[in-house]
Amino acid sequence: MYFLNYKQLAEDLRDHKVSERQKFNYLITSFIFLNFDVICRSINGLLWETFSEYWQKIIIDSWTPMNFIVEGVFFIIMGIMLFALYIINQRGDGKNFIERIACLYLPISIRITILGTIWGLLILSIGYICFSISVTDKLWDYVGIPLEMIVLVYGFVLLAKSLTIASTPKK
Image (cartoon, rainbow, N blue to C red; front, side):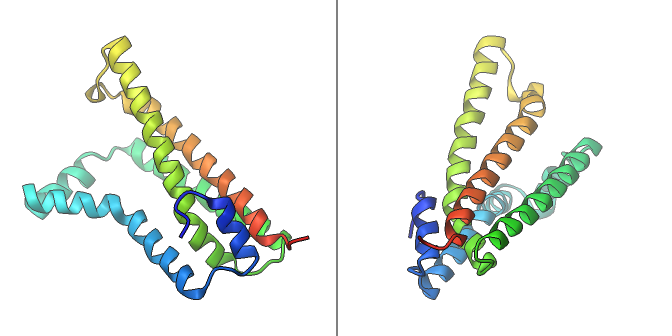
């Protein structure tokens, strides 16, 4: 399995070098990675608070109308990006879109998670050191959303590049 090398995985998908078993492994690993945050939050909530108290605090109390607007915009943008990825695949050989996305999601999501974490820590550190702004001062509200958008677009660009490789017949 390739955990970071999405280009090699795209080439292997194009050249039919990835077995069904390997595709399944990518899918299940992607599923675990996608849900890792939820799993960790759930374990933390179950260990330290009652389940209902934890989810009340995390889900209900922390959401504002702006959160719903931002999440709605992200949902729409992600839908547009997914449709664009489908078109990119169709311009190539037009085959195996679902399995390509399922496999390529893992190395690309690991890359953007690492990048987003580094950027986020850097921004929070600069804000704290230079301006004495802490996370509780809502710094993340001002820089977190643009940062998430940049990471989302970067992930889309990587998926677009890798789908172009995977769907273009080898010359």
